[in-house]
Length: 516
Image (cartoon, rainbow, N blue to C red; front, top):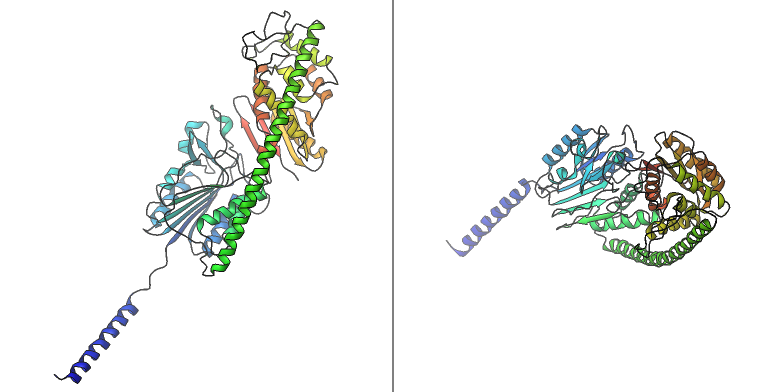
């Protein structure tokens, strides 16, 4: 075969090969787009603690994720069986190399370091029943294995409506857990803290997340950084979203080839983070100054109480004196007994101590027009330690200098247990006082009295109220007050709705009323 023939044959074979290759390329299915599966759950219709926004949040998130190319399983107001089944369906849909996202809005709680999501039909009587009545977050994490990248978003750190049934002290919010490899865990607020349900169509956290998902060119970690910046600014620092990430790959909700736009957004995010760091530093400096003020106020309170003790002794009152071996930071005050040699032990004081109670009331009467909230509580309830005095001073200063109308009401239920209601962030004092009294009365089942209004101690009402009592269970009231003032109204702040926390160990209730 000559060269021309060989060349022609080679050219023909080459053409056939090209055509066959083209046919193969044409016949081969186009590479499937990366699988993206999302399970979205919003629970709001709890029989005893209905929430405002979770269903709205879940529906809005489902719509957003569908627009971003996710296949979405949406469940609202799910019971335990429905939630468990949806977890299984979610896991079955995941394929190796895909992207999974789980979003939950509703009640959640932690028990002994484990996080649980609460179905609307949960019947939780104690800590033990949580494991059978709620869904363990670990059960979800076990379903995520096939995905190359997983996101778990929990807007579930609202107040726990079941905590009053627990024997042990309750720590609000969810527990910190480490994200498994290839997973990002995003929380609406930091571990152990509470998140706002929100006054608008969506909760504070979810509203910020919906906005951040619309920003093109942001990697998934930057999306949640943007959310954190937005929530911290919107809540005035009261709520800080938190993430735990062990991602090993990249993901963009809205990929964007326009590098310039992405760079601008990243620069803006960096600038906002720098401003946030500056603000945090300023707040830290202010906090240091506040601590110095509180310490000074505490020392002033200590001196006043010591003076009252001395004056009471001179007036014929028998005042208990702390043991000589007591630590220097302990202050013995207002423990009135028939004999100066006797001591008053609140831990072992019997339920009935009418004589002691009468002497305490008599001393407060003698100090009429000189009392402050801190001074009255310290004398009435035998509050003596430095830490407790600091809390009293800190609470009184906070309420006085908060910059908005606030009130604290107190009362007692039929069993003699204390009830407290704090109302804050109101425009007018009348709104704050009415709200505090209304919700305290509802909690106690009997009329309450106003104790503080814009930091001013309501001495007349207080003295009138204690005169109507023969005695109270001082240890119980002391513990209840300590737990109340340990959480300032700022910690109960929400952007809407009523946020209510209870502590079963003292039957104390704190109710925070946000601004209107």
